[in-house]
Length: 138
Image (cartoon, rainbow, N blue to C red; front, side, top):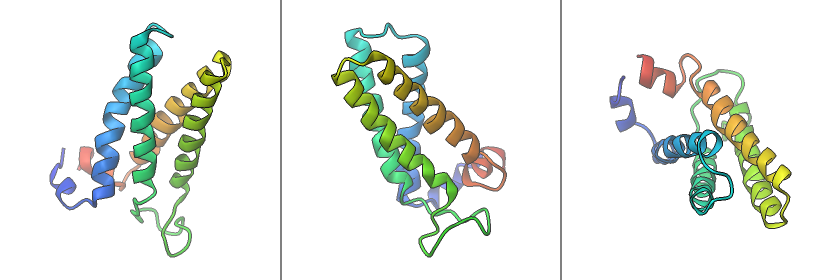
């Protein structure tokens, strides 16, 4: 693990990592171990949604042009930034559906947020030559 890379990382990357790592742990617990609807599930769910929202905001400022030719425009927004929109929509949908008592839509939004916003985006973040690949594998 090459932690020295984090010393040179922009603040957006640090904030992104600082929120995504606990969100991954909490999201995993929420899906696989928590008692749905319990006060603990609700409290942890609020923390999880805040962490995922901060993660998405931080991700909008990450500009790592590691895959030449796929970044769009002068802001170097790449295809991975689609997960910012997916995360924002999923957080909004999870909140509105639970407030309206639509448990099925809430569950779907939360599963999409976890598997799309965390797992799939995480797999893409670990592609060779990206920061996470270099951080963990040299």
